[in-house]
Image (cartoon, rainbow, N blue to C red; front, top):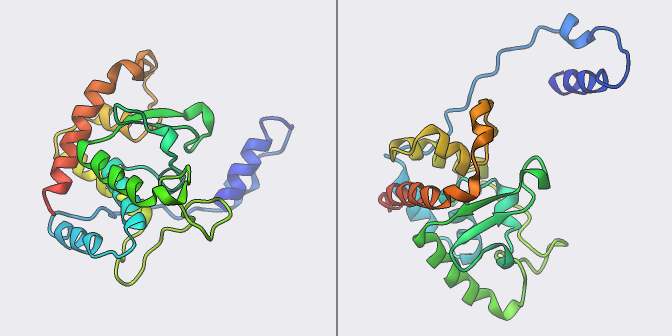
Length: 214
């Protein structure tokens, strides 16, 4: 019903439609935000399961999601050409499409982990950081809960966001790091390219907190 309501509202921008029947006829249940972040008490176990993961490429992909808050699709499709020599990652087509492309500085810890994966996968000659020989795309297609690692990909984003607050990173900076939209008019005057140094400092603070549970 929510999707149908959204589609009718979108169509009404172009066509002269009667009042949305979903709005008039359906009383929606109130949605509750997920308390999904992995808390401090459970973080050591998460790290233990990560370090025990036999598939090192898949482990590195989980690390990228955990230590950057990137969505699964952006992490899985990461190409080496997207990462420059200064450790700044270009995310070319995030949620919202190419118009929402952004740059994200990575922590030193994560850059080192990715360097090891690059050496490991070099014989495959793949442009992707997390290649897969069995997928049509050429990169890992599925990241999901398994018995030995019972966490969801988007749970890593929630965990990153929550621990960023605990690390003392301010709300506006985390909004930039997660590439979230900001409704404030003053935010339109911010030039992201001039804030990469500040964002890198924040990234290091979040990483230090998360890796500290290892």
